[in-house]
Length: 473
Image (cartoon, rainbow, N blue to C red; front, side):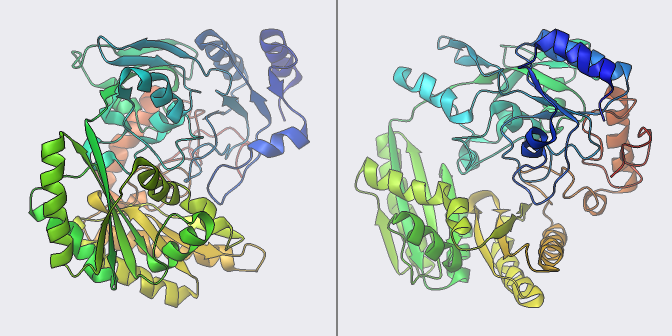
């Protein structure tokens, strides 16, 4: 329950249309793209950094938890207000403040949708490289919080490789600026520290990103396989030939059939798996690499290698890839998306283990992932209406992530830790490393009010220490 004094202060600051507090409205903000839920006590819609700072100061007076929220497309519970309190939605801070093509920079508010950056710059021959599958909906602020990736991160890197500077509000309402327009600012890399900190250290209110030139030529290749192992082996073979495509995406047969039925994108329903490979660059280099990649795929027993003959055919293939989660929704009432990373050479054993997990828990698991950098996205299908299926889906996900760790990988490549994986992070890092992470959290947020109950495992995080009474789940 938000105290009346706090509600009155918010009303004076933002006006009656600047916040939501009725139960029926708050229900819309109790979830994100993950499988967990928790309802906020108040949702506010600031329009400026000054508004955000003022809201944080108001919350600080009553020691109320605060959670930042972008579009709510996150997949690890990062925007779920686990301890209640105030959700700060950045939906109305959605302006592109500057496009500087001379210095190849853009300055953005956090509510700008990812795809809108490229759309604003493409007439001048530029684009913004990180492209999550949800790029038509996800916002740059959420991308910064989770250090989001996407299919083209193999060549271009994830969000942190493209963020140059941040304006942010700290938990006491003070404002800081990190980084800037220059490519390498002196001092500690606070921009890098805050990118991927999942809103647990500061609320980002302005972002300076790098724009990139459109490549001269783009070529998209579809390689089709009768076995998953041959498909996975092609990824290592391409890498061994010193070729770095812009993207290498892998879809298994279960996913292929769902995608094709939903989008008619041209994927073969009878295949065991496919690779969707994209090359970018100078025409001569791309043509040469295309020949080498076709040879690499056929060496690994690809039954067919297709090259998209037009921009429309290429866009259709990518439409199938980007709309995959929606395709799953047509088949299963619920699904649980995981996000683990393994070395490229361990993709095939990991897929075999996922199949064993599917059989062990009696759940269908489809696979679609960024094969080029080993970022696995097993999608676990379940029916939340059936007793115990959600719990089995979560257990299956944990089993897969533990296997990723054992293979020398990670529990997340781009979705974040959030509340979903906060216990598993204790298996990723030793106690000394976890203590250092906790120290950083405490340095920025000593009262543990900023997105509490995220990232750190129980005993190291905010759900046990310094959490105000009555704020626990």
